[in-house]
Length: 305
Image 1 (cartoon, rainbow, N blue to C red):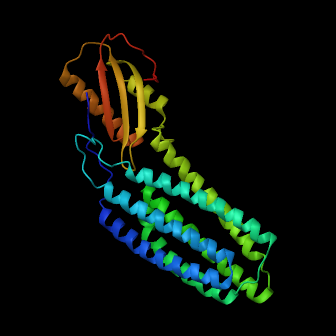
Image 2 (cartoon, rainbow, N blue to C red):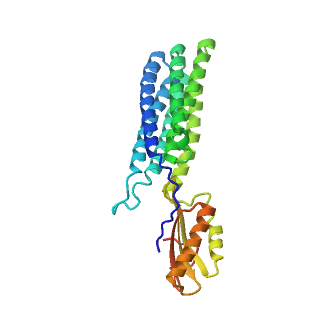
Image 3 (cartoon, rainbow, N blue to C red):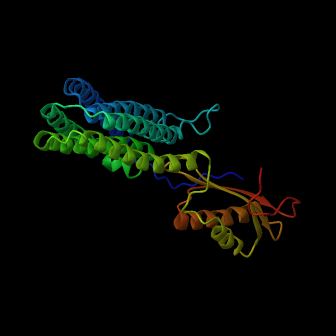
């Protein structure tokens, strides 16, 4: 028996998310163009690497924007879940690009460290300052939605790490201007890259778990089974699946073997109690229970389909 629980976590901020993403896209296009020109003129690898990361920001923001728009589309006979996982897929793609960009930065940083070059530090200082302001504004725009949405978090992380990279570039520019420490450019690039890998890997791992239908970390399946088994009319809970569809939906599917051949109305009452239990204790808002009585099937909690 299939059931859609009435509780809904959707925040309804899709239009604001889309608007904020568009503003961030335009800002990052301007920053990228300025930094590429400035990096070439000044000879700063840190500025060019920051421009490369800003370009990856543009791509990631476009991906996030498209995913946000797709997620609003309704379900159909061909797409019964609609595009609810589009934002998770976007988060996965953006996390992967963070790591790729970081590896490229490390390669460039090592090469430049072995062959340091004179850098026009004044241009580096001004352009990194502009990038800090632009990315900082974008970070503020996306921060609220990033707390509850994996797709927005991936875009936010791209922008936040780029803002931090620009701060590092600014510090490097000041050190080069006043102390002639040109090797700082390569060292800061390397540090930025390591930070990107750390942030990107965590998001990549989280989004992969959702895409692979792994049980959310906060869901204790054994405890839930024990609590449902405590119902007097339930003999056994088996064939359990718990997965996260998107940011708003956690699904529970299970077979329940009853001690007697109960009526449909009695099952509906028990089903409602189970729904309330798992929603209020574990935030599971979609429950699908298959009732059984005396059926000859595997009774293990986890059964490989």
